[in-house]
Length: 298
Image 1 (cartoon, rainbow, N blue to C red):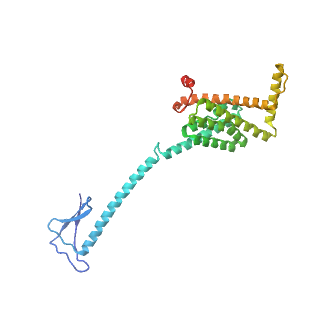
Image 2 (tube, rainbow, N blue to C red):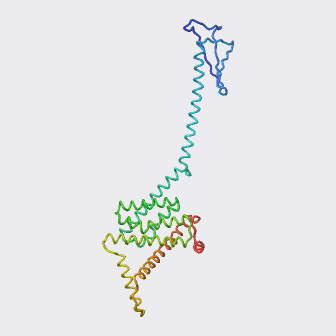
Image 3 (cartoon, rainbow, N blue to C red):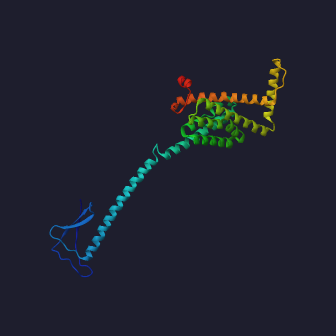
């Protein structure tokens, strides 16, 4: 219980009325928070206050109640805002996770761009080509398919700004689409054989697109030159075996497509093998669907 002591010196009001009291009185105002009522007590006797004195006292009581309620409400709101702010920045919060995903995707894109530019500048692209799709696959496995697509787009845009459209398109067709496809199939836990086959098709389509774009840029039909050389090679092999025959162009196209798929299939299988070992070392083996022979070997 809060105890409020007031020394009241009562003077005549403007109407000339005077309170009847005996000597100097000390009033005790007891404020009860439970009932929020103001109780007046006197040590010697009860005083009957005039209306002119009761009005300010009522105003004081009303102000005290409003002030207490306002203070309590402000304190409660501050506590709620503090709790909301802590939840807002929690490690398992939605905002924190979105920020972390954005930062990691940006870092993966920067690493891919730097590795591709250095490999092209130093003419060692053939030795490090198997690692260009790794940041996209890693981003897809960690944050989802949309994050992998964003990493691919960010890398392509960076290459377009830094080195021009030719290298950006080359990276997109040969490595970007393959990384997104591989990360998507692994994220969906597709079987190993289906993933290798589909990634081989994606790689082959990207390689054909890159050849078409290069043919347009240099003004020469590279596909025609390739098929002509394949036709000459098949004719030489048949003649060396004693078979006098001229293969048709449809047969040549079939051989060209088969060799292209075979090359892309070996490349996709190599990427699956390397990335499986890499993700296992990172502790992400549970999110992979590995064949039994590879799982036993790892």
